[in-house]
Amino acid sequence: MNIILLGPPGAGKGTQASRLQAEHGMVQLSTGDMLRAAVKSGSPAGLKAKAVMEAGALVSDDIVSALIDEKLGTMRADQGAIFDGYPRTAPQAASLDQLLAAHGRTLDHVIELEVNEDALVERIVGRFSCAQCGTNYHDSFNRPKVDGVCDVCGGTEFKRRADDNAETVRTRMAEYRAKTAPILPIYEARHLVNRVDGMADIDHVTSAIEAILSNDA
Image (tube, rainbow, N blue to C red; front, side, top):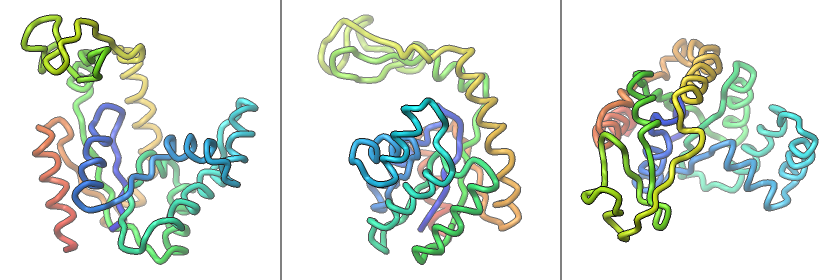
C-alpha cells in the first residue's frame, strides 16, 4: 500500500508515519530526510543535490524524483511507501504517478491531517523538552510532575526550538495551504483523499487512519 500523508508542521505526520512503519512495515519517504541521506551516502542523485544545495539553489524536481526512484528501487515489493513532503505541485504529482508505475506500484490513499490553526499554534508554541534526555513536554498539556524536574531522568534544564513561535508557525501554515492547494483537486477527482482530525488524541488519529487503510484489506 502506498499513501501520501499531508498536514502542516506540527500536525503529527511524523508520529503517525512511525506508527505505520511499526505496524505495517511501511517506509516513510520524507524528501528532506532523503536529501540529507543521499548527500551523506554520495549516491548519484545525492551528489547532484549536494552541488545544487552548496550553490545555494533549490533542488529541482528532477533530482527529487531521482531520489525517490532510487529509494523505491531498494524497497521490497511488499513494503508500502508513505510519501511525506512530496508531491507539492501538480507536476510533482504527475511525476510520482510515473515513478510508482515504473516500480509496479499505485497510489492507494491521500490522507490529510486537518488542524485548527489557532490550536496548532498553541500546541507547537508550548512545546519544550528535557535538555538531557529529550523527553517532550508542553506548557499546557504535559508539564513535568515536579515543576522544573524531568520525570524521566531528573534533569533540571529544558530547551525549546527557536522556530517554535507563533509567527513562524502561521507562516508554515500559509506555505502548506499554498503548496497543497494545487494537488488536492487532482487526487479528489480520483477519489483518493480522506481527511482525519489531526487535533484529536494521537491514538484516535491512528485508529482513523487504520480504518481508512483497512478498506483495502
